[in-house]
Length: 225
Image (cartoon, rainbow, N blue to C red; front, side, top):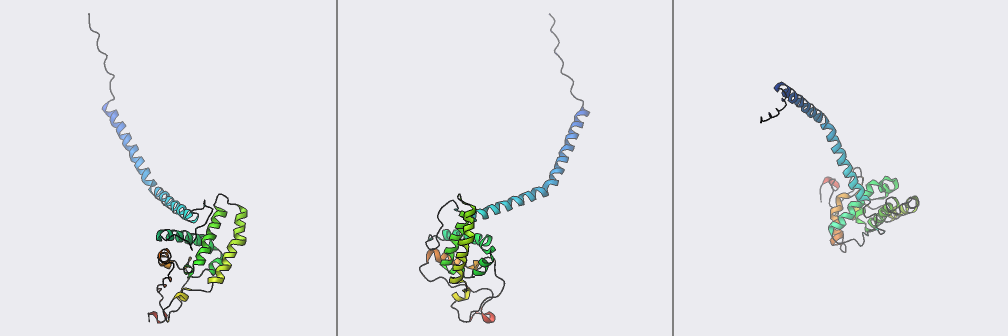
């Protein structure tokens, strides 16, 4: 019996056809590379926007940190760990720049030496958390926001004006001949002293506060006596 012939494989594409396909793929890859390179500036811009969004989220988290809690932290009874005290000041200074100092009477009443006044820091801390509760907390409401504007914020401003409104860094100096520094005020005054205050309030709050360091302006005559 004759063995049936094996079926022959279908003829493959001609060599010229394969070269055409490869050349077409190469052109497509080159075109894709060109388009991706054109997108580089867009990608960079998106990355910058993502970084800005992350920084904004961090700032908002600092401003409304612990907003879910019903109680506000106390500066007068703050923990004695420097990191905890630093955290309280970081949150407070962010909020001061974002909210409190936007009000002209708030900006005018807060002296450069506010960090040297524990009662002022205490007032500002609870006012910040009252704002968080009114605007960000689980019980946020128009009524709570109105109370913050109509009663709480003006009350704190009035008490700060009475207790420290006329004070200054120079009032805490003991060097003879020390004069008031000149120059435009910073958005949140006195932040250059935050590290010294953090260490003092965390570890030595029962002792005298640290003496403010000399500023770049220096005393009268431009040199220490």
